[in-house]
Amino acid sequence: MESHRRCRYTRGVPHLPHRSLLAALLCAAACTEAPPPQLEAPQACPPQQAQVAAPAAPSTAPVEEATQEEPPLLVRCVEDDGPLVQRDLEELENRALEAEAKGDAARMLACADEALRIVEDDAVAAHLRAEALLHLHRLDDAADAFTLALALAPNDPWVLAGAAELYANHLPLRRDRTLAALAWAERGLVHLPPAETDLQVQLHRLAAWAQADLGNHRAALVHAGVALHLRAGDRDAQVIRGRALYELTRFEEAAQVLEKTLASNPEDAEAHHLLGLSLERIEGRLAEAEEHLARATALDPAGFPPPVAVDGEGLAALVHAEVAALPERERGLLGKGRVPVRVAPLPDIADLRAEDPPLSPTAVGMFRGPPLGIAAEEPREILLFDRNLRRAARNLHELREQVRITLLHEVGHLAGEDEADLRARGLE
Image (cartoon, rainbow, N blue to C red; front, side):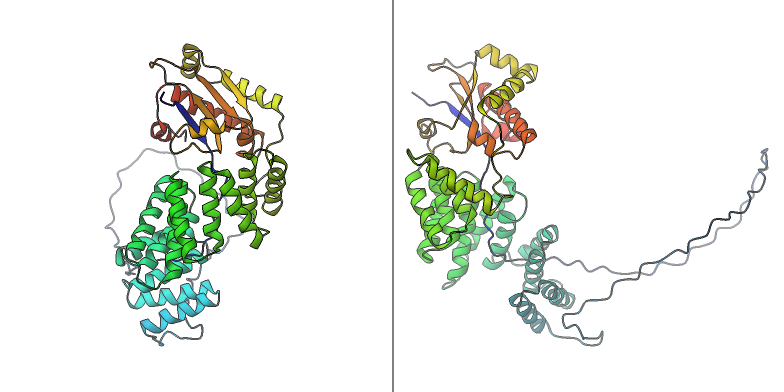
C-alpha cells in the first residue's frame, strides 16, 4: 500500500561558523561639475485682483546656520601615504592579504579598494574586497561584491567558495540562496586545482550543508564523508555527518558520531543539541537526551532556546482554539473529510521511515492518509507534535503561530497540495 504521510517541520540546527572567502564590487563614481543656472528673462505678470497681506512681523527666533558635512578623507592602504604616492597593484593585494592574516579587516578593505582604483576589473582585488566586507559583517555589500567577483572569475574555486560561504552560512536562510550556494560549491570542486586540501574540505562541507538545508541528507552524508576522509576528525564535517544521520533516522549512528565530536569539543552547543535529539529517539536514553539538550541551551541560549513552557493540556487547548480559528475553507475541508486533529509527543519512527528518504524527525506536524478525492484505505488524521513544536518557538505567541501555520500546511496536504505548492503559499 502506498504511504500517504506528509509533514511540516522547522529547522532546529543553526549553521556552522565556517571561515569566509570573499569577492568584491566597487563602483567608481564620476564627478561632473554642474553648469551655473541660467537666469530666465523677466516675465510680465498680468494684473490680479487680490488683497495684499500686511507684512509679517520680523521673527525674533535665532537663525541656525546651515552646516555642511565635510567629505570623508580617502582611506589609503598605507596610512601615511599622501595623494602623490602610487603603489602598484600586486603590492596592494599582498598588503590586503597581510592585513587579513593580522585580523585587520578594515585595513584589508582599504588595500583592496585602492587596488580597484588602479584596475577596477581586477578579479583578485575584487575577491579580496569582498572577503574584507564579509569579515566586517557588511553582508549586503559583500553579496554585491560577489556579483562582480563571480563575473570576473566565474570558475575560480576560491571565489566560488567565498560566494557559497556567504550564501550558505551568513545571509538569512532562503531556498534560492541555498541552491546558489550548492551550485557554487559543486562548481568549485570541478575547478579545484590539485593539492588544495583545505579548500577541498571547505567546498565539501559547504556542499554538505547546502544539501542538508535542501533536505537531501544522503547527498549531505556523502560530502561530509569525503571531508572526513580528507581531514579525519574535522569538527564541522563530523557535525554535518551527525545531522545527516539523524535526519535519515539512523539515530544510533548519529549518536556515535556526535559523542566522538564532544569527546574533543566538550563545549560544542550544536553537537550537544544534535546528540540530545538523537538520544531522544533511542529507547532508554531519554534522561541523557534531556541533559544534552539542556547543556546546549546553557552554552548557547540564543541558538538553542529552551522549549516553550506549556503543559500538554495547555497545548491541546491552544490547538483546539487554532482549529476553530481556521479560515472557512480549511474548516470545511476538515469537516468534509471528517479529519481529527490530535497532539502526540513526537513523530512515530515507523511513520518517518514509511517514506524514502525518511521524513524529518523534526516534523512539527503530519497528515496521515490520502488527499480528499482518493479512496482512503487508512483513516485520515492530522497530528501535531508536542516536543518539536515547543522547540520551534521561543514564546507562547510564536508557538501559537507555529500551530496555525502547521494546521494550514497539513490541511493543504488534505486538499492535495504538495510541498512545492505549500512553499509557494508561504506555508513551508
